[in-house]
Image (cartoon, rainbow, N blue to C red; front, side, top):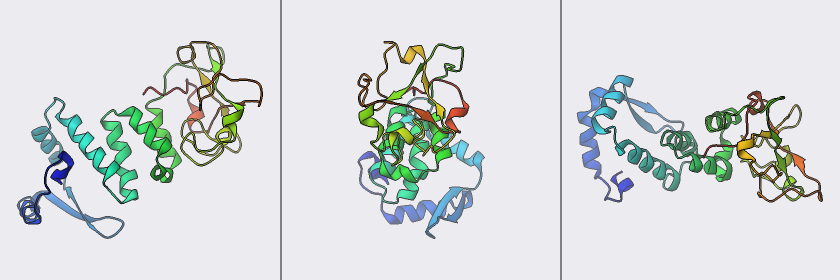
Length: 222
């Protein structure tokens, strides 16, 4: 495991000794494949270990980054990756990398829509964009309309929620940008970032019922 920091792997004998020494503090469980898992038996023990080993400086950030890199680049179990990696990226405040994983990594397609929406909700611009407030409609150009996967799932872009990527068949809500995130006042495509032209005709960006519940700007603070 020390290979997370570029060092040699710790011998199995040492791991066995560590496990025996800490046995009174550990709870043994099993994952979905029937493999043994180890956890501290109480949250207070976890807090004590963190306070002891992770000082308030950037040690915690480096620790989270090392774990995120391990799950991202070395772990071969996709189910374990999608369970741990987004949470680690969020906790480490690696917002751009989190959005990139959710939208571009094939492993992330198995994440439930409501979970994806929760991760992205925390990054969403807080400026209100309901009726009566300054806003501009978010658009997808005609070239990008029928392409797929720009927002994470493999659906046509014009039928995908522009935040969580889920398919929006009916009851979609129009997406808007606040003046801060549309400073030029001109419409540009959310996907390719090029100016919107009339031919082929563009499509309005839409939100699913989960993401559309909050009437705020759809720009993400990354």
